[in-house]
Image (cartoon, rainbow, N blue to C red; front, side, top):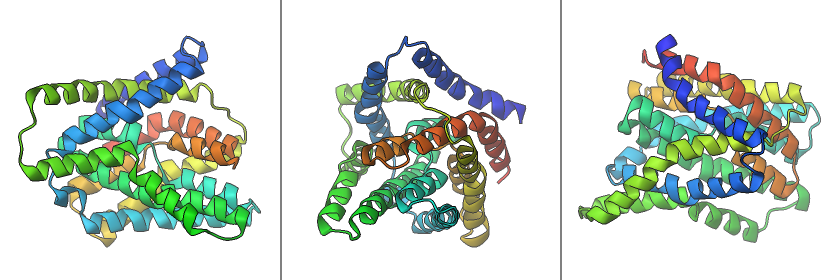
Length: 309
């Protein structure tokens, strides 16, 4: 277990450096925003394109895997929603809490971490999880918030949400990479070198950006943040493990990757969505900060456990 902790420690150390830079104002909020944009629009898409060009469509569209992850995540999502409503939390805030319970930092943190810890073959399963998070839960939170306010759901909102997901640079990079691979055309050396350079910047920049963004997060509603962190770091990976191993009998390696990725902390983009719609942004902020700190230990434990699958 110590060996696993030492392997994951550099990832969290980079997050810590980012946090320190943000906390001391060496990295301003504007600087963090621009670094995040660089990662989101250039570095991570380059990494996803690079990996996708070495994957077959079947590696990213394993329907049993997708269904197992969706079923497990939806079960936790509905449980978190039920608990929120039982506490008389408004629907829009309940949607944010449920999102925190199942959507982890798979993009910025999961893809580079799983690739380095488990090897390039781990990227396919993580990309499938990212698609479910973006297409299903990324759409669901917007639908629930707008629907609860308007009392109905318009086709215009659904269209905007769907097109927004399709235009996500990470989704576009995945599909472009798979399409390029299907042509069997060799990538020209200059383009390949450019993609390699951008992809190489994705891991340190993404982790540093996570840390710097955490410097602006608050710990208000600590009890709720601890509850949501428990759901995300313990309940969610346990549900994924049950669905993958016991119910759908998914191959041990990709099941292990999914369980490890499910144990990652709450995704930072939930705060952006919550803030944009004025729905429980501080609650999301606290959950992101608390879950990231706790995951230094819990993620290492889960990764160590899945190594036996």
